[in-house]
Length: 397
Image 1 (cartoon, helix red, strand yellow):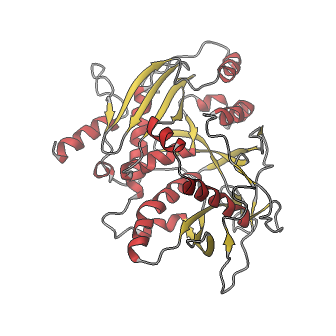
Image 2 (tube, helix red, strand yellow):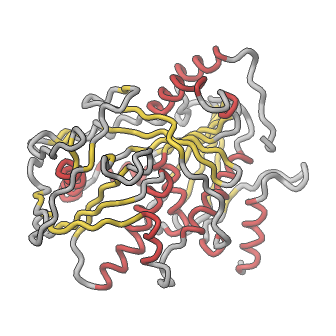
Image 3 (cartoon, helix red, strand yellow):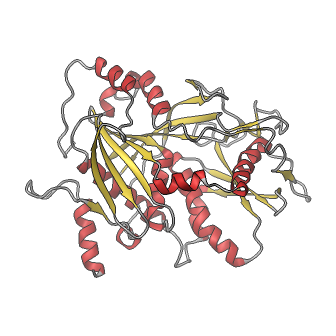
């Protein structure tokens, strides 16, 4: 298949609706980055609607009790020297990854605030509700070469809900995770403990337990093209000294990476790791990522701040680098594809979008278990609010 033919196929997928009613929506979506290299699409500045917290037992609280505050060490010539192995595994409480929470926490927040949304509950009819992490996977898909994904989609009262499904390969990889990788995961959380305080103006206390059940999540709304988005993402901390104290502009993302000493190592870092950092932070409107670079012994020896809006500059002249326009255009194309495919309004009907590197995105249709993800308590509570039965949307909606 030549490039022109591939491009024609992409154009057919990206139209807002079938050109005539005899043509059914496309059954697959290509992911070749050359197909999505047009101008950067409109993406509205993310606006925070609210937040919620998860405690040490992973219980939901509709407040900011889990929010932590950025408190970096004083700058000196010696570097920070944080021991990221300290407390492992004795003071470590990892989250139970067998517990698949889906969208439940976000839906709980939505149920509590549905009537208070600007524009009322009607704003949701036609919007897309999901986690920031799921959108991050979409943004990076054109450049991802190793890990596939599956996204389940259901339409309920006009709203399109997207929920990630763990692929068999990802599950096998998680269950066979080697000890070194488990320790590296701990190190990322331990770095946050060294960099965050419980109150503004206070100091971090790295002597406590690292409990990955605890989370602070921001809930935001935005637009990508003509798609209304309502999504939530975990936030590491807020900077009380940020120039703008209005969330999400005051949030900071914290990351760790191994020390690099060769140009080739930095090139790979910019091409791969920085792409994921950019996608994650750009979607949420987080302005800065602070990275701790660790040595082979697990000590952070240097800190570097990467402003989100400047990350692309590191790969702008790299022909094997990534392009933000490609990422966002593909995400917009996928959302078009999903909106045009998931036309039946039924919370028990699931369209499963599947992708493996080197292949197009495909879709299959499933009724009830095992892929349904909108919980009965949510469906019943929202349905009882309705004055009449939900209208099944047309593809135009």
